[in-house]
Structures are given as structure tokens and as C-alpha cells.
Image 1 (cartoon, rainbow, N blue to C red):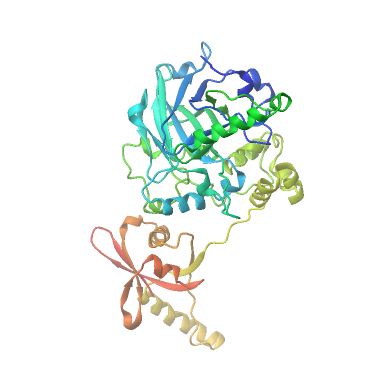
Image 2: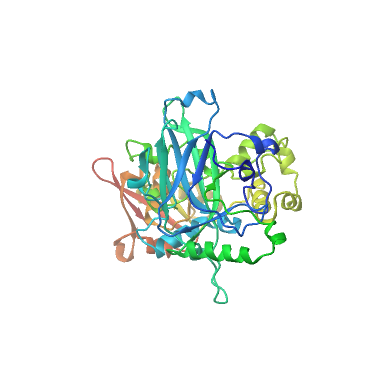
Amino acid sequence: MPIVPSDVLALPIFKQEESSLPPDNENKILPFQYVLCAATSPAVKLHDETLTYLNQGQSYEIRMLDNRKLGELPEINGKLVKSIFRVVFHDRRLQYTEHQQLEGWRWNRPGDRILDIDIPMSVGIIDPRANPTQLNTVEFLWDPAKRTSVFIQVHCISTEFTMRKHGGEKGVPFRVQIDTFKENENGEYTEHLHSASCQIKVFKPKGADRKQKTDREKMEKRTPHEKEKYQPSYETTILTECSPWPEITYVNNSPSPGFNSSHSSFSLGEGNGSPNHQPEPPPPVTDNLLPTTTPQEAQQWLHRNRFSTFTRLFTNFSGADLLKLTRDDVIQICGPADGIRLFNALKGRMVRPRLTIYVCQESLQLREQQQQQQQQQQKHEDGDSNGSFFVYHAIYLEELTAVELTEKIAQLFSISPRQISQIYKQGPTGIHVLISDEMIQNFQEEACFILDTMKETNDSYHIILK
């Protein structure tokens, strides 16, 4: 049974933004309803989104309610669905630097998680998982026909992500987002059913209670006329329908690791990845929009590149239409931050890698043989007795780690990274120095290397950079 008034369900997805939902959504019955058992702030204006204060580390119940009409979604009757919980940033500015923000938090709070499930208190959840590389995400299976309540704990506080200026700190708002999926024909939970979210702020223990009391006292001092401009404080918080989390469009390509029987599909490089980049890979580098792209394909491109919010605005735009937009056009339509990002994506502008090196696969023996042949061929043509021609390959590094270099060299040789035992750099007097992260960070930009391979047993190799 739904427990909140319909006007709450019609609130905007983000503050000061129009809802991305259809205009007839006010009376729409959603298939699921999620209720956070914490009171909303009374100091929120009528047309703003609700704001809920939470205490750091305290367990809060979220009720998972089956809200379907009779005969709706019969394919999930008697079956489980999967829900993914996330704590993400509300502010667009922080959304664009989320990777750096979460990595910074990881360094300051080693071993801690941003989001956890209080499993002993939860009811009806099956196979809860928390991937160690995704500090802000948890997931589980549940049966919509049975009572389901999940208790979550948020361990970060809003002021940990605030720029410290002039001695005062104002905490940033977060969002709790829930995305729910059903099984496809292969038994993978990849078909999106429903997404909803709400705005929260997290305080140190008991801080949320003090903030709620302060807001209540402020409202009591206002005149009746002023009070009419503010929402009442609801005892519970209803998560409002929103767009799916941008990266779930890739869940078909890489099912969530929490529900695989084996983790062998993880590549070596994923251990150093961002908490928010797994298991969904980023859009392919070559995913450029073409003038021949149809409106339907343009919609898919917008989804893949995290512009789902603007798909309705560009419903009938083909690739040619989008590519004709000027920078000012896009900024006027989408706002400064999203406009610049969309304009760069349309023009296919790539971020420069942190380090570029060039490698040649030829061994020393092959190099000498080619040198002799080319010297003979070119000597009578241009008189250059030292001329030689070698094919080099560019390797672009972002993380500047030995693991990343191992993966890139493995791709070059079309082998598995696990087949490369060690990578050495030839040092003074011909010694072999083991490659480390620090050594890679001190490579010169556009340095050139000859790759020599030493085969071991069991199809494994030593690589030497000369």
C-alpha cells in the first residue's frame, strides 16, 4: 500500500531543475515504492525536493514495497528481482569529480566503506553483496511478494567533501538511489524495472537530531504566512522516481560481479580502479557521433555517454542535427556544466593521457638483421649507411602503474596479462631493474623502448625494456 501523498511523488529530481518525468506522472502508480524511515526537514520550501538528515553509521530502514496493479509485470511473479543501492553526490560539480572525491575518501579512511547493509536487522533480502572496489554501492536480491526491509548505514559525512573556506563548513547533500532489475532470458539481472532516489545530508552521530530540532525551532518562529511557503515535515521519506544510474546501460556487457559464481573474469587492472567505475566499463573510445546517425541511434548514444537527462530534449535529433549545434547552443540548452561536457563529446575531444611511451616489438637480433638488410638497400640510394626503419607502437598510460603497463603490453602481444611474469628495464652495464610504479612515474614523456621477450615455462614471459 502506498503511504505518502501523491504530491511528494511529483517533486523534481534535482533542486531547481525540471523533473525528467512525463508531465502526466503525478497520478502514475509506480511498480515499486521505497520508503526511508527518517523524517524530512521542515525547512524545505514547497517546490523544492525533500531533504532528510541521517546520523553517520546509524542503521536506517528502507521498506521495499510492491506497488504493482493487478496484472502488471506478471513476468516477475514468483521470481526474485535485484536492487542496487548507491550513495552518490547531489551537486553536479561533485558528480563530475566523483572518482577523485571517492579516491580521496578511500585514502583518508582506509578499510572503511561509504555504504553498508546492516544484515542482522534487515528482513527478506537474499544474497547481499558489497563489492570491495565499490565503497558507495551495495546490492541484493528480494521477492516483491514478501515483506522486505533493508537497513543501511552511511559512514561518510557531508562535511568531508566540503571545500574548507573562511573557517566555516557547510555539508554537501548526497543522494540515496535505488535501481531495480529483473532477470533476462539468460538468468542475468540486467533488465531495468524502476529507479528512485532522495536527497540526504549525513552528520556526525546525533548531529542529524540536533539539525532537525534546529530547523523545527526556526520554523516555529516564522509567521503563519511565511510557514505556508514551506513543506510540512513528513515522518518518512519517499524516494521519488528518477532516471536510471547512468552506467547501468553497460550492465549487459559486464554483469555485476556480486552475482557471478567466479571472479576469474576480473582483469589484473581492476584492482586499481575507481570505486565507481566497476563493474561497468566506460564508453568505448571510438564511440563518436556520426552525421549519418539516426534519431534512435542518437538517443542510444546520449544514454551511453551519460546524457540521459537530455534525451527528451533531443528526441527527434539525428547525428547531423546534434553535430550542427554550436557551443553556445548546447550551453543554452543544457546549462554550463553539462553543455560543455556534451559539446566536447559531440566533437570527439579526448583527454590527453598522463604519459605516452613508444615501444618496438622487434628483438635485438631481428633489429640487427633488419639493419644490415636496410643498410645494403639504402646505401646506394641516399648514401646513408646508418639508415634503418622500425615500427613503433604508442602506449598511453593513465594510472602510471606496473599493472597498467603489463595490461597494455599484453594487448600488444595479444596475450593474457597473467602470461607476463615480470617487466624489467635494462639499466647501466646491462643489469635488469624490476619495473615499479615509481619508476613508471619517472619515465620521460614519449620515451622509446625496444621490447625483448624471454619465454619461460607454461607460456609465461619476461619482458625487457631496452
